[in-house]
Length: 613
Image 1 (tube, rainbow, N blue to C red):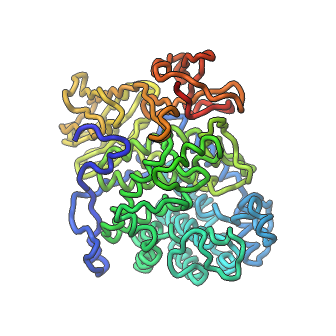
Image 2: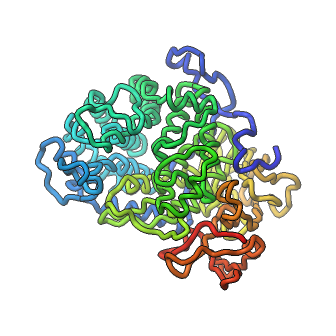
Image 3: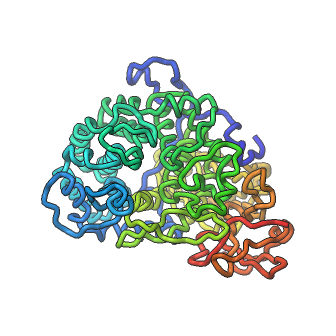
């Protein structure tokens, strides 16, 4: 296939996904269905992967500790208050707080009461699947039963985000059913659905469109009914019944969103960034559950459009807004906002979308994109605090800084714990007699296939060093194909098997496949050359560039927050000197400039982009 450019990889390759034949399963027509094709790549279980990267595991430990520290009464308080029940316990405050007062006053306190509860239950269920910690399982079971006692219509009537809240509760209960094996989860879900539906719009309603005529404040038009099909389809697949499949179809945002996207019409401009990108996961589930090729095309086309307006970090949506194609908005955001990318929520949507697309197409470019967002945005998020302080925006302004969201317990406090759990299911995938390695981070995968027990241990200090090593253990020799993602930027990569270099195997932008009878002690070594390169902010501003090394954006540390943007030459940037494992230095006319990855900038002021003269 050869090298695939970052902006154009979606155009290459043939689809290798398989959707359920919906006409057989659900009795649907055949207009947009995919009836045949190779098998979909499957995810491994959360407990199948042990991660040895402290950078990744620290997020899991932090978010798990915060969630386990919150009292049951505090978590249930807004639901009980909205339902008119006694509500003892400490009020968490921030967005999580319930306040029936003035709309303008409660946009930072009381903005989305109970909004993260379902996400936290989901995250705890996934964390139990990872750790097997019985206290975590008991917490999930207890929270579900306490929540079940609060299910009333008032929770949706008094909430500016009824569809959003329902969607998160739906997923929390599904994950409780799937990972914790809560025997009551689906019954509680049915009760939740029965209660919520009369208070949701009967179809997807666009952001900023008024549908509750008794509410005048603009914030009551910000609900996200157009995102809920993904989890409705998942519910139908996980045993909740045909009802949820039908609801998934009912809430697809087709007319103004998916249908034009399927025709490759860019309708991004002005839409809320995170929620509309997240809605693309509903399109992917429409393909996987109902076989709709139209929705697959919509997701693929939209992802390419998103790449065209992404920062070098992989982040997108400055001020939480998707932009018109070929505009100067991305460049202008470097000076007019510090809200560059809604990080935990945006990365959660991005990881799901790239995971779906990779599983369907087996195109490694989606893994490249996932990796870029991971290392340059969410892995650098400040840790959650038990007082509700949470990291919200990555700041790509010329005067950037890592800070907490001014409002406590925002939506990103709900998605960060889910992101921290999901690193595992992003790293490896499987197919019959095949394994796909997507992310390179120290870890061990354990699985069974063809009557044999395997483990594959990945070691190395990537993305700071070029080499990644894999060691196989197998209970008996077994034929298997292992595919290793070779990033698009990794020209000159190599693959060695048991010390012997495999000629012509490692092509940039492809998966390198090794098929053999694997046995204990087999060893694979990847060399992924981490060469320095430059990326412009957009084609109209070629003098504004980011310096990258492999998947990492190296950010210029500034002497003070409002200091000048460093001006250097392209040659000086590409001649950056490495001072330590995670620190580089660039010479400039004004003296040396320190360059650090986002995960290392700490509280220092920095700029993602510099000017080249």
